[in-house]
Amino acid sequence: MTAPPPLLQALRSYDPRLRLRWCEMAEEFWIETPEASADPELVRALESDYRLQLDLLLKNAPERHAIARRIEAARAARDGYRAIMFIPRDCIFDTDRILRALVESDCAKQGNKAGVNRLYDHAAERFYVERDKERRAFVEAGSRDMYDRMAWLSGRRVATSDMAAGAETADTLESHDGFTVRIRRGAHAVAG
Image 1 (cartoon, one colour):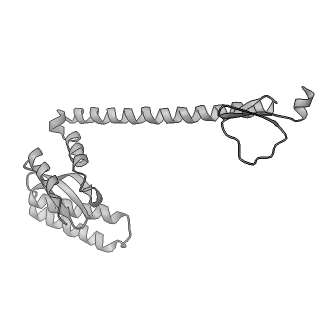
Image 2 (cartoon, helix red, strand yellow; image 1 turned 45 degrees about the vertical axis):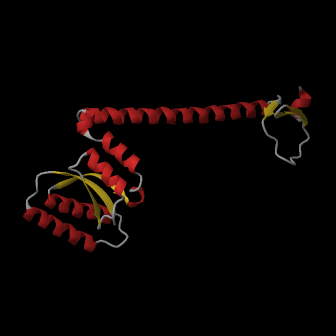
Image 3 (tube, one colour; image 1 turned 90 degrees about the horizontal axis):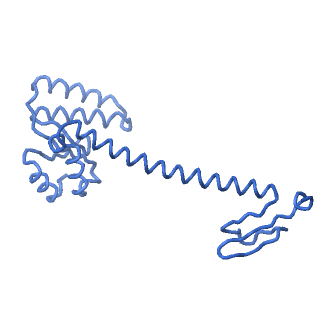
């Protein structure tokens, strides 16, 4: 499988030492950076061991992908490279996202590992703030519904934004601008 030319050009302009490789066994693209070559004998032994493990696994076993990645990592080490990013086949045409992730995770561009960690901490903080907003909205809606239910059961008027079409009720209905007010009729209403 071949990579799109715009991505190859963007990678070369970002860092000419990087290479993009299709990993047949893992069925994904890898962006790799040069590193000192590993001992060829050790790499050969690791690759052989991982291949044996892969052959013993069932075709649909979830571990197959992890072992396939280990084999591909051994191949990269044999060539003098180390993987820095894995790109699923479906995402290979999203050049902007790939480059953004590459820049964000590049220790040299962020200053050091602490810079990358700060970046991820800020992203996590934004995620938690957004999640907390959603939780507060959910709790607020639930508490409003509970208040309306308690008011309804105690015989007070309750305003609802929608009334089920064709609902039969003995209650008095008052229609207003965008909502309906039900005045509940029941034993507790007569007693009051």
